[in-house]
Image (cartoon, rainbow, N blue to C red; front, top):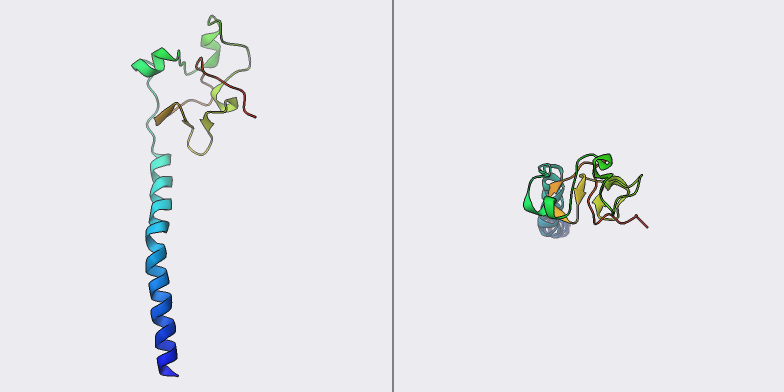
Amino acid sequence: MANQSRRKFMRHSLLGMAALPLGMGILSQRAFAQSLPPLDPTTPQAKGLNYVKVAEEAAGHPAYAAGEHCASCMFFLEANNGCSLFPQNSVESNGWCQTWVQKA
């Protein structure tokens, strides 16, 4: 009987060690996601897409329509205020850029 409990211990230990890298990967992604620096509107990519921190500031842009803002865009990532178009930065939920597309 002692051998059987030793086998269970070894099996559970190996399974736990195998699952550890997966858990660490998930935790590190969440930590990274929460630490995205805010997007600077003066960067070349932000300027190229006419990004503004406050959507109403884009009122003069031909692609802008009232009510459009990052939080309602399909590229916006709510978990970290990230944007698929600016993967290294967070964006303002009330911001806007010319690639805005309504969430489905």
